[in-house]
Length: 82
Image 1 (cartoon, one colour):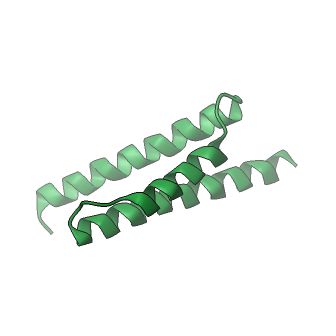
Image 2 (cartoon, helix red, strand yellow):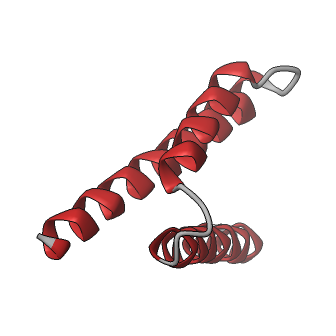
């Protein structure tokens, strides 16, 4: 794989993890409701348009994957809280 592509993938993964961490922290503090963020990511994924079809599908998948990760993290926090 091309080094620049690997670097780009790593940076994107890092930013995605930052988003997940910040969202979880803000949700725990009661500043935001991460279920609304998750729902918004899913809505945005469904409304994306105007991109190359392969890029569009990748972007939709990424947004829906982030939404799923937020949902899973919320469920885990709720289980741990009792």
